[in-house]
Image (cartoon, rainbow, N blue to C red; front, side):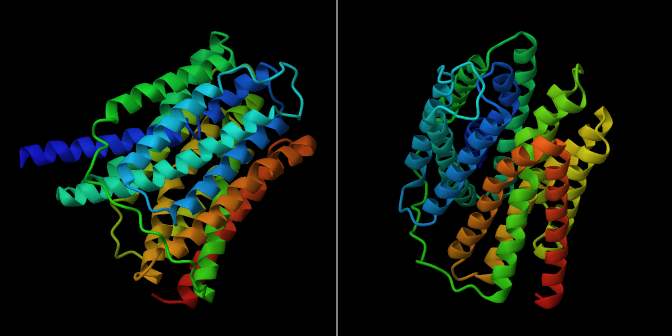
Length: 390
């Protein structure tokens, strides 16, 4: 039994580290490094938004691919992690001109899109592999630890980016440092990712969407748009609101810590609760967090905004996936694919809107739009519960 418990903990920690690399570094290291890239004159805010959208587009494509691929989980996760390390290191090459324009080096867009694909592949396959292994080892209770990985990765990169900026590091050095960190973490978990995994079955070709499932997908898509502006531009917004302050470097790690905490709490919410009620509460909480960044742009206000916007981040995904399984218990994968598609579309739309509106009114108009979208989503889930009782 002791050996079984030790193996279960190794599996859970491996999953946590894999998601920290793929999500916390592969996807979201861009957020704390964006202020350095702007300072170095490598991108403009419009260019930064384009790089973010390229990454979110890649994630969208990768997630859809995962619903159809037939692959062994462990080797696929290894390949995705190696790709994440390589793509992160490649961002450290001097592809920019040093003259900030809205025209980006095409390779940067390719690198960020490919990193999005890799992060989606790792997320889907490592989640399935870890949960299966933990079930076999009779330690399914450790599953929540896995999903703390993205938040903890955000915390580490966020805390490291502040000293980098203070010491005048170029953004390229930051990318290289995070690539090396990712490589070290992959080396730690490499031996655990072996055998005992599951083969991904190809999902069915499609799903017949009813009024209820269409409503669910549309409402869930509002979450992708609602959080992404904050998740992409939080350090930039904080520096703009608090010029000369040392605090802006800490709001992104607060967001990441809240993501990890929210993941841990959400896995302990009993399945007897109506998922749509939980989604409504999570949407409302995140809406308040986004709104606080506009109406209270102080140290305390931005800290609370980061906390409230981060806490529901993983919970929203968890509750939506549970609802998919409730509605399509015989074959939930196609519906999950639709949810991923609408969520991804929202993520892709957010950064360009934010940079377009920034020209005339700063970040406030786009944040107010995002908060409104999340509030609308909360109301949509309350309506769904009344219209289609469980």
